[in-house]
Length: 109
Image (cartoon, rainbow, N blue to C red; front, side, top):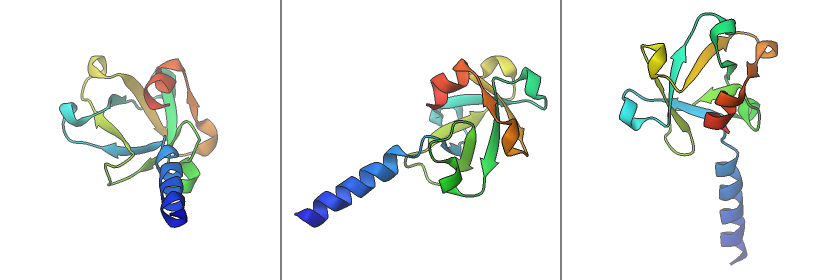
């Protein structure tokens, strides 16, 4: 009984800490959030940094870990046009440039 309780506890902690794990999908109907990628940070609702490791994205807004698994990830579709998007994103190469506003928090928190 204790082993089952420990397993359920560990699994629930793991699943609730995936707030910034994203998976890119190919179709709009599969997505949770539609995103438009812009080249300039002043046009974006958020500037995000894509991390190579999951632990770096844990409990940090604006840090994304791209996963191939659907389980526990926010499914993101990249739109071709800005008017179709829920959030406008700029991807940064530097961690210190991460910033976000209320629109980003509404869709990714």
